[in-house]
Image 1 (cartoon, rainbow, N blue to C red):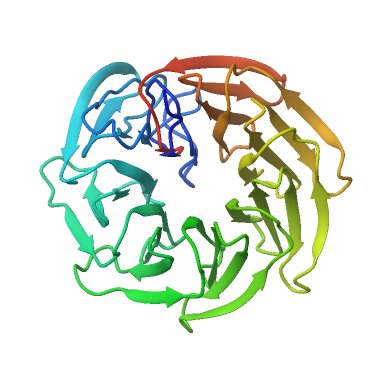
Image 2 (image 1 turned 135 degrees about the vertical axis):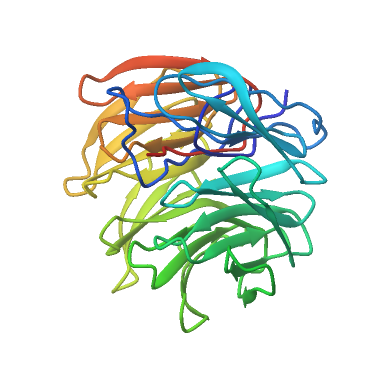
Amino acid sequence: MEPAIQLSFQSGGKKPRRRVSFNRGGRGEAKRPALLLAAVGGAETERDATAAAAFSGSSGALGAPGPAMAAPCLEDPSLERHFKGHRDAVTCVDFSLNTKQLASGSMDSCLMVWHMKPQSRAYRFAGHKDTVTCVNFSPSGHLLASGSRDKTVRIWVPNVKGESTVFRAHTATVRSIHFCSDGQSFVTASDDKTVKVWSTHRQKFLFSLSQHINWVRCAKFSPDGRLIVSASDDKTVKVWDKTSRECVHSYCEHGSFVTYVDFHPSGTCIAAAGMDNTVKVWDVRTHRLLQHYQLHSAAVNALSFHPSGSYLVTASSDSTLKILDLMEGRLLYTLHGHQVRASAWAE
């Protein structure tokens, strides 16, 4: 079975998964952490499977490797809602800060913005010339960024159906996109082996970070916007100073491709997922390895910290999502579902 390609949260599923991100809201009304997982993934040829599985907390949404996405309630793993509109496999998803909207990208080259309120109208955004590989809402929720295999980045206004602003500088597929916490800039990672930083409001490319020697799969800003972390097929995780544009440290402990990285909400730690089936957590101040998890039986494709900082979700080609308690260093839950491409915590 092919590994999943991406993940973004409001509930859970089964089968290989590859990208995970928690909604910035973080805490649900339940006493346990609210896991809202929107997940999509699987082989590109598997375009008709839609499944949903979730647990504990508020309601959620899940995207599958088909043209549809499903939204289960986390307190009950039964299917609650079903979003259908894409004409091809869904590749990526992301929640707005207020969790009222869910954006999705697809192999049909389109984005869709779904309103979580039942029977609300969905918007379709067309402009990319190839698969949409990544989507990310700005912190304010007023903008939506997307990256594509067509090598471009686009910025959209999610509540207005219309034209987008096109950003060009990458020479290969754009793999990930992430807004800085102030919304003034965003960072992208690409198969052209570079990390690029862009100005949101000036609508221009600013600079490249170019020390990786293989595809860069993921890049994220630190919560305070001072640092950038990147993960690459060159088996390294690099931390960059945004101001000096220098690599301040390179972590080389992974035995294979590094698939995903995320900053702890405190900004003091990073977690990285690898094709070597492991998850590693480092202190970015001392560069010390804090935790090393070997809980999956296949490549770990994605991970994300809960906004409280106490939990970490991981997604793997072994068809599971795992929720880790970082304070106690133990596994809390294992979710089985469908092949996943994207996921995120929601309030």
